[in-house]
Image 1 (cartoon, rainbow, N blue to C red):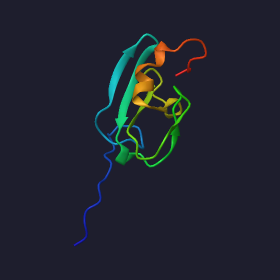
Image 2 (cartoon, helix red, strand yellow; image 1 turned 90 degrees about the vertical axis):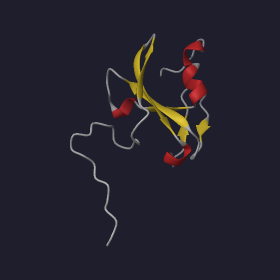
Image 3 (spheres, rainbow, N blue to C red; image 1 turned 60 degrees about the horizontal axis):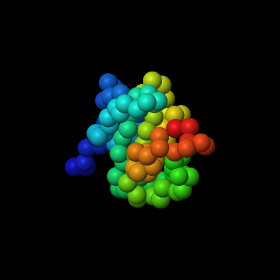
Image 4 (cartoon, rainbow, N blue to C red; image 1 turned 45 degrees about the vertical axis):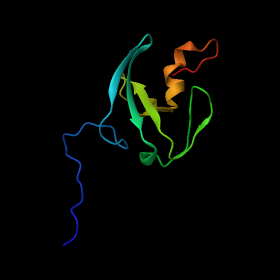
Length: 97
């Protein structure tokens, strides 16, 4: 007998490409943001952090964020956790996100 494949429920509203769990909404001066931590195991791609402009290497834990008011996949950004927490501390020229 072969193992059963996990199926996505039709009423599951999670964005595609994200593991379940851990997502929360954070309130910031620039609005509400959806924030989801990613473990190193769930990340197989390389990303560039908009906070420090450095690479987030595959397998490194980090955060994915997007504005709660749009919910759009195009607004998702991958951040180093520290960069996300300190993003509003930046001076002129700080990241848009």
